[in-house]
Length: 250
Image (cartoon, rainbow, N blue to C red; front, side, top):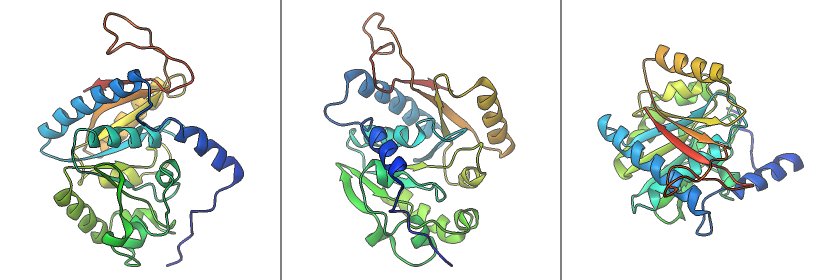
């Protein structure tokens, strides 16, 4: 099986990734962003507990909606609870987590499943405090087959046993069907929707796809919006040149 190295990106891709990396949560992140993710985290903890699961997949309808950045930030928020978190890039066609977190992608998910590497050497330990990261690895010619293989099932089983929470960044639902192949491993999906980009039709089509796959959307994470302060400001907020986040619990 021929694998394609993903470490070399075009100048345009690097510029776009550099801009997105600025939105990854740090100790200097704005209070409103941090609080928005805390709200999402709290609701998601209850949702996963109800599903008796510690694993969730984050997706969107189309690319460019801020899904990967939101996935990273959600994982960081869980890690800040003191929980042991594993963040996995299962977008084997267009991976981005290694770029956002500035990690090497020499070995990852595809290499483990293809038996070209093992988990212990591939995982990035403590990429952020309490958070390990497993990047995608080289781009394979058959992503769907790999995600449906017993080797991937074994990988996720091991991860769910070793970590308190497993959070997966997945391909957009409206682009490929890979994401729905993960339904048996997760408690459900978090759908990222972007203000003025994701349409009501996109959301309806996404929900229909999830329903047909006999799985569920646990909630929506809204990004790219500007919200005004009201009252104490924990649920309503406004700021410029940053992502805004709101979590809708379902």
